[in-house]
Length: 395
Image (cartoon, rainbow, N blue to C red; front, side, top):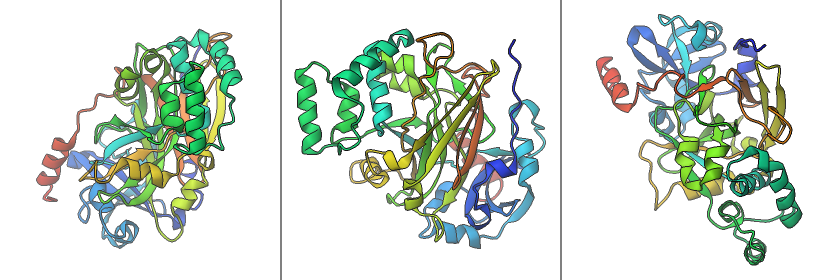
């Protein structure tokens, strides 16, 4: 018999190991103001700096966001422990503050097939036509034909193009291999601005999906000028059956209510934390199910086939502008294949799963899985934010 698992958020597991020296920015829902506030973490005290920066987007546009955030005067609104305790939906007191995703007006984009492991799994999804029971056989066939060690291949290089020609001749070419080893990265819209959920929230799986998985990733914050200013964690929830049936279902596979989780805080780049720290990050994943299922895995950014700066350059520039800035999921190498519902069925979520994504420099992002129609409906968008900030005299 399955029993609901508690979703417990603690300060110790939420924050980075070096939180005292980190510049951590987030957003908190303040019921008495009927809207969100931009906050800075001072130790374990949550400080509202909305008077200085009404949006995280605006803060990220500063020449030195970390310095600007530290210098901003603010109002202490409570301790992090009490706000974390009040964040999970099932025990929230709506009269008290709760944590939100640490971004607001930025576009939410994601890069796909940036790791060899996930590249192979995407090809398998395509060849299996979204049927999980066919995955094991297809996986063996694909690996036998092209191998699994494509790490040395630089996307777009002469060697990669030679492999492409060989695979075409063998009838094994795939749209996923095109973006995995070709010159152009896959970058797609993950969610609309303001639609992402944060640490402690429920994440949504489309109720029609029977084969899906979490995707533990680093998410970069990028200014409108294309400058990378910070990083956080993300769960790019994926429906393997929908996307496997057709790549044209990518929007339905990726953009559902509560399917974009980002948090817990945005760590701004400063002297103690830079893009090089992101490049070395090891991202851990833990799934705990109400059926006693346990899964652990991870993803090392060091094994990414396209450097984060290259992905950002393909995201924003002369051909694509984002006036409010943009955040970018970097992709994952982790595609769980551990059988759950039966031999050869692979992994899929069960309702009530607790998913935790963590790395020492960014802390942890924890969410409970529900179907997207059961997650709280998204009702507070950009227009509601503007009205609220105007009412508070902040814009």
